[in-house]
Length: 458
Image (cartoon, rainbow, N blue to C red):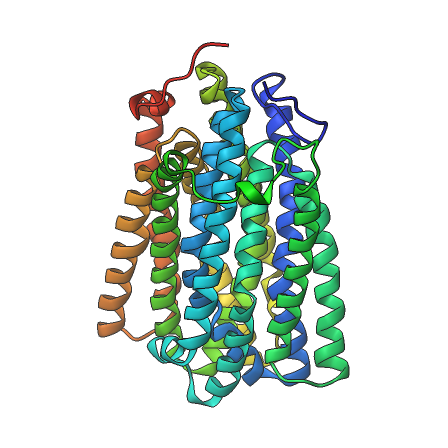
């Protein structure tokens, strides 16, 4: 039997909306500070070193996401397994899943570090990086991937804590590391006047600090996710479950990342002004995505725990609230960004051309954030229900294949940047229609049973 401490939240009892909101708020704040990592990098680099340096940082953003997202997707799969067994009150399998997930995180982080550092120039040539910023982009990219192990491990620890309803400790650790990142950015770039690479070094050091804090917490014996180093390794039945739920999530993240890399390549064809503008807007959109992400993480944990406990109607009620809250918050933030776009873009770069392109993209996309939120929220419900293949298939077909096809065709006939911007709301809308039909008419609440995993009633 699992005995939960105060920070560990059993989401199978109590008010669904209070539980989801209470879980989502620390996640939102945590994501807010995490978003500050690269945003502070861009703000300081853009204001100290100018448009070329900002373009160098921006040119690699989607490529970094592509390479890290696959491995981080596996942590989502492990989170589903852990939340499922936590809801079923199976402490032994929770422990096995924790140790297997941590072993997977170590192996994944090491692979990502080696691949990222060695193949940086090749990756940047693939996306047609502007030759004027290539040297700075290579140095930034390599230093970033020198810390890839810390990035993967932090997300591994965070997924474990979130799976058992502990969304507060990841917030505390991230606040500390974010503040450290700001201090190091200012020291390395504004004071020492080091190059763009120093922003990635600051991120690597800060992320490593958050991992150290996580390790200290996981070593405590009175936690449900306590780790014992002698148990670290792969429990193969649990590992197969993680693969089952994590592989689709990893592929889903990667196909979105691949589509964005191809978008980035087309943006780069308009040269460094467009690259800087796109990068500036992407940082702003990253903040807009935070309430969506916080509620989707809460939804996955909530649905996973309740379906693990066979609380089917309760899972439905909570999912409806989470979807509505994510959509509403996203649209409110989208309207704010639509209005304030000129000011927000100017924070990163004072160049009038950069501001004009960034504002154009913001005002094309921000109004449709509700569609983005809806797709991600239903995808989170599917993952929590053990239906990870569904969001992977939808996003592969719509956000990757269709988006890439649209951009490739339209750029061949009309080489105008605003048509690239329209690729996002168009594909968000289509995926939302598909997700709505699936949510309303499929039997997603029995996903675990149909997958061969049946839990006894409490």
